Image 1 (cartoon, rainbow, N blue to C red):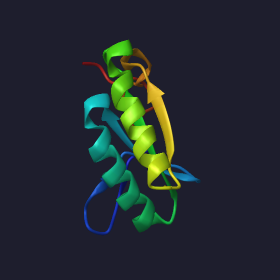
Image 2: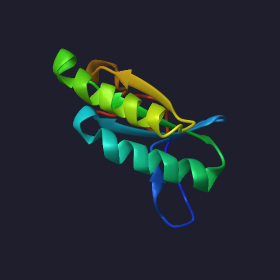
Image 3: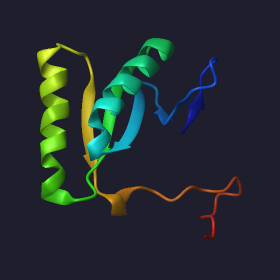
Image 4: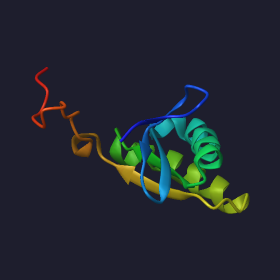
Length: 99
């Protein structure tokens, strides 16, 4: 669930444990920066979810993300998702929104 911080920035998903930034794979570096900021602001562990829109072609971005996290010793989780697994928004009545 999206969460608005006191400075009006928005965490894509805030869970009990994680402050999650979701981005397309080519934006891996932005994902790191935003997740770290959101983690600091919320006291949660930062996490990046990369949307792997181009399958195998996006693996280079995932490698870059994980290499940067590892080399800098960041306490950050990384995840991937295929576009078809990204959920549709749900209206307040609980049913899917129509496009």
